[in-house]
Image (cartoon, rainbow over all chains, first blue to last red):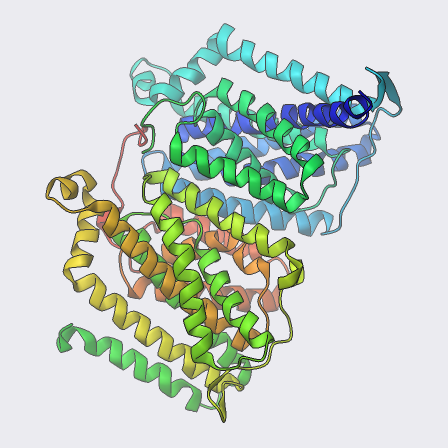
Length: 292
Length: 316
């Protein structure tokens, strides 16, 4: 019982918190994957830019809450601009070109951030301090807030995709963009707005996690790999699958750290991914045969 | 390999061999030439997979890094013979490549790319955190290897000629391979995998074969790296390095042997030259990459046919 409340439960909560944030990141990735057939290598950099945009806004307004609204908007606008300028000409080309293009974008964003904000580690102070007694342990309030807001966002995104016309249009574009075009929908505009939304979500995840982690220009490089794993585990292009897989990976990672050093945890997670790719490449909920 | 087709390669080779005799080839340029030719050869090996067989490997940095660690571990322990280092690298890289190739070739498209990527990350994570191999610092301060006792590869000029020999041999090997029956089957697999299978070819075995060959050529290049740099670090295996290798192939052009060599050399020289003027050279490289994808999708020497137009759902 002691072990349960002192060790297992906090770690489980850590996993939930991290999983929820990872879910925000992976959702954007999987939607873009469904739309463009491309793994967006710049997604980790949009996540990183979210944290830096947050620092910039906090520097001006001294408010984390204003930053939480403005930073995703700024990064979303950057995403829209990027999509129109670079990805739009590639719609009818092989996915490989999109992959390489986003790799180039990632280089530009990463180095741009290092030039503007420097290469040092930065911290954002949690806007909510203190901790709450919970189930026989005490847990930091900010992490509880993070879990709450990320969960609310995930539900909101689910409602958007199932209950609104715009959400249905995006899902239709994921299924068959050509057909949607034939039905008279302005598909390029759908792509641009979706890319902007995906960028804003990544930025939001970056800013929300910034008080828990540290902020530095390479912070997206490791995170994006984890997000890839989540997307594959959930099934590429499957929205619900990504969220489930994000929680699975988040909880698995924080529970494994109880018994293994970080190196073994990382290798174990990679091992899970290799197994999934070999045995069931479509993941939990993916359609069979996609991209094979 | 007909002599009519091979003479331009020989002329280029002779020119590259004569280059150190010119007065402007200082030690700095000799080492820059080393890197340019080395990564050119590695990009050429990767193009066997990418351009000829249509398999995008996102894990070639691991083959390169394992080769580098193989010689570095021996050099650190006082085994200075280059041949032993190369032999050890072939063993280590070959074993690892067999495992990766066996599993990765069961999958196509982006799943192949991701499997190679994740396998490479396992290797990276292992070396990054294993203190026996220096952890994140890697193995530093290595002595120079020798060809035979008395002939150490300890000057920039000797390193340059060594890498030139490696490039020439690797090019000859690739040229023979591409022109052989084996190479033609690879192209058939790229063009239509199912048809190649229906014709009776064991497609997976051909893919595994080319994976291992490409990995070995890359690993041998990696094995020559510690002799020039005096170190091997886990950063050589980071997935972004694999991405840079893909960029080199794309700059040069998919589906040719000469293209990626030029692409690799261009990338290295661009990086070195831009970084000596500005601190933000990654922005320049990123922009060059974006410009190539947008405006010059064939690369410098690529095949037009590989750039096929497909509808939006290129994935279905």
